[in-house]
Image 1 (tube, helix red, strand yellow):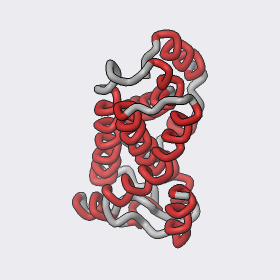
Image 2 (cartoon, helix red, strand yellow):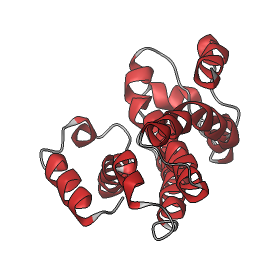
Image 3 (cartoon, helix red, strand yellow):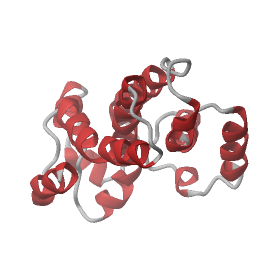
Image 4 (tube, one colour):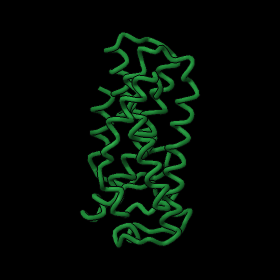
Length: 181
């Protein structure tokens, strides 16, 4: 019900006022899906739930970043306004696919926040039951995107970010085999 309630609130298609609002949305949607996955796996563990919370927030931030070119092509911008204002960036800069340093700084700040959530989730690695790891394998795709965006100097519109990583299944298999997330 939390997921449905949060999606209903988000139907107006307004930009997030701040990063906390985006994280709240991610917590109530992405993290809830992870909580459900953990429940299906029969895991009731505080550390697993805490890791799921941070992974969900990272997923929400990365999804917002990944969707920016798509939304921009439809004349919409959902990036947090406080970060945009901090760097003097307007929504029009994203609609024009600007590659200015200020636009890259907005993307850098958001990617850094997602990375911090991933790092925090991984800090629970030793405390999380091994049975929970399959639920957290999405961190491999999140980490892959964050590395790719760093390689293009946080240019959210770089064409390489729209290409599939053909080695992602192999990375998922390796992480699964190593019992890491």
